[in-house]
Image 1 (tube, rainbow, N blue to C red):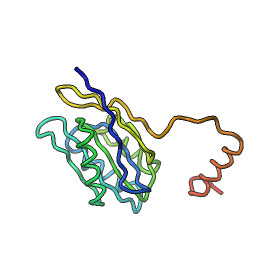
Image 2: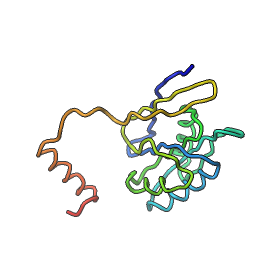
Image 3: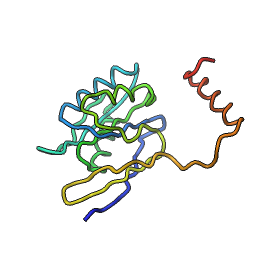
Image 4: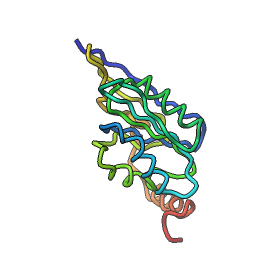
Length: 163
């Protein structure tokens, strides 16, 4: 028997981003810590990883105790083995995602977002698994020329394109 459920990803404050993924092996915590801390100057973060064997603990690390606590609590709610979550601020996913994905233990990433998101979970007698993530909202239309201009202006305003 499989039970399906939705878990809302919680954001402790505006400006917080999340990367949710699947990984393996106990050294994931230290390797993800190094990848994040080296990727973006001034980043504040907390991360957690749920073991799928042995003591099946939620391992955690970070340089922001509140974000570390939120990451650990969120993984307890998700309750799926070999899962990791990184909460961070003062940076964007584009700054750290490739470094996170390059960590040898990382199997996949489900999302990198600051949008409202829901995690689709399947549970059996053995445990839980992430089937996917609902990230943000459904499209409401196709961008117009004015929308294209606004998009390009926004990217320049936040410094991701040359002015």
